[in-house]
Length: 427
Image (spheres, one colour):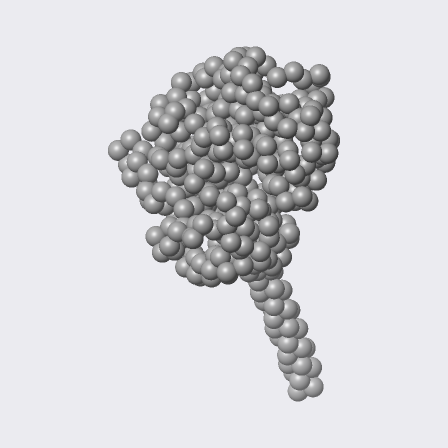
């Protein structure tokens, strides 16, 4: 009997030991899984000179990571394009869809059927990073968020965002929705150079929407001297992200940071990156005063349908110089759809500066641009008119190759698809 009891006790002990071991292994596995699920986001950054686009400082700047709400820079870029093309009016009323209303915070709290103007949706997306407002804009531009995401990726390629793929208009985590610090810096720069009349929205610390006041998510606007934008972002996967721009002593620097532990830590890190950028940026070589249009608040009402604007002037580069002539509403000759791409080399607040830019670029790149036509196109409305310096007459491949050669020669540029210049130049 005693032997049987001892045997039984031994079996029980072995069973208890095995159970404890199994429980311990389960706990360890659970901890590992939890740690992996909540692993700290990767940190990455890029600091660029906003004048030249040159990378001044970077770490993992080309690593594809989650951009979070930095995504909304592209959402707003396409919205501004739609407004300038006349496809949307700033005071046009948009209706919130069920999908837009279902977006998680940060949000305005729109309900299905609620009405919001384009102007107010822009403010909400830019200042408060409202996801529902971003989706409302996306659906207005492209019909659906899915279609808009494809447009975002395609247009991003034109802007040089080679490592970026967008899957939504908000930046909410989704498989394949990835970008890099370098690409986001390029995008922040494009917003400033391509839409100077709208860029001021990113520097506002608050915005009024009907009877509500929204306060910015970008604390750096209040704490860093010279900061004037541009966009914050946060998701659990991404961490605390920020694309920031500032100007001091004629220099302009953009810093993008991914993966911060907190908003405060992120802001401190970006402030240090901006400081480093100003130390590394070359002395300004031109007067920036003529480089962009006024950054006054968006107050000028615009019609929902904006008729195509006439071109202001055209120049021939066939002889190596620019001889401007008035063309009224005439349309620049384009041999075929395949030769209807353009290259933009500047955006200015007066026509003289835009023409001077065409002349200077042409003089430095006479061989590269020998078959192109120079054109100054008009954007915006007085008093916030934008004069864009563009070269026409390229196929898509030639436009991209030529722009790459211009950059090698020290002249920054952007590739513009056919609709981008036809809206300004066509009759």
